[in-house]
Length: 506
Image (cartoon, rainbow, N blue to C red; front, side, top):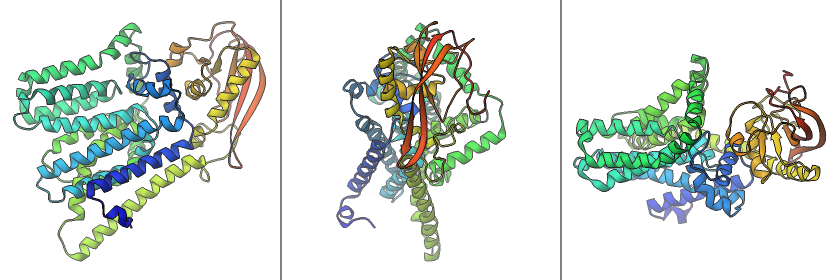
């Protein structure tokens, strides 16, 4: 039951109160957690300002630069993704209201409320509301671009100057956020062609907007031209994936429903005026689903697509919940929706609880070497202490760098052990090899090993001449053991060798 003083607020203010409460919840949970791999990686972007980066465009780093330059604590850094998440939900809410008016629905406010609900009940979106990833940016820019595309689909829009320039600016910012923004651009083009036909190609302001978008993404192209197009080559190779398997596609579909919730699927029901806007869902979702068959699609990559579907889910749920019919049928609808809401709310609460509890009681709590991913929530704890220990040991041993054997181990150490450079010893190119370069032949370093992704020591003939164990750090959550860090002083690097996983003894 909603508190009386909240019930008495106007509807729009109630929604804002709900959004503010969820942002505060994100901050509270985030304050108790360490940085994830990706969060730390993109914070390091802000420590190394550039026109672009090896694996992503630069906007995620540029936006964090002011707070990072002020050495803001992690809880304050997480305010930015919280605000972006709230702005995303609010933009989807407003678009649902506009679409409800277009479809002559009397339940405009209900459509907005259901849109807010389906996004607030999507478990994975809360993760993107606590940690700033490129997808966090693309969710907001995608739904705003979708609304702007809807404006430009209206009669007479071909002659409007300002809306086309804003459209181009949004496309440019999306392109500075993530390479998959190309899917949003294709969806927007599809919608505009559906509304205006080939006449849109004769609209001068549309071309000027497109020019503005290309100027917006020019830093990415310029950086790649200076670095032998490594980002584009990496993305092409990464997107190709491995052998395509139908089982992986089915697994992807199941994970998507669990991660975002079945309520959003209501957005696929019925036909609406403006339904062509669902191209903002279908284009990215189908491409990423196809890529998932080759094992090269992660669950959160589809977040902008699901956000784009949310206004249509809001419309459909409002009509379903308030449809006329006998009282028995209405009660049946209410019970069915109540069950789905309860399940999705429980999933959201469970996800946050697992992050806070480091996976207990459902995932193994052990400091021993375990299978990769055996406890994904252990990854959020202990890295701040490990970084501080690495910095102290490196200073005591007189070594000038930290090294790891996999790039996913480098991000948190790069952040928490700063300003020490971090070398990734595995062969190949990554962002850390651009920042710190390869570890020079003959160099000494502090090697850090983590029990949940542990590797055998890289020793001669390839690797180091000698590695001495300096210290271990056991990470506990409450009284339960969680992970173990080992710190080695390693001498006389001879060159890269493929890492050998400790658990399977390869």
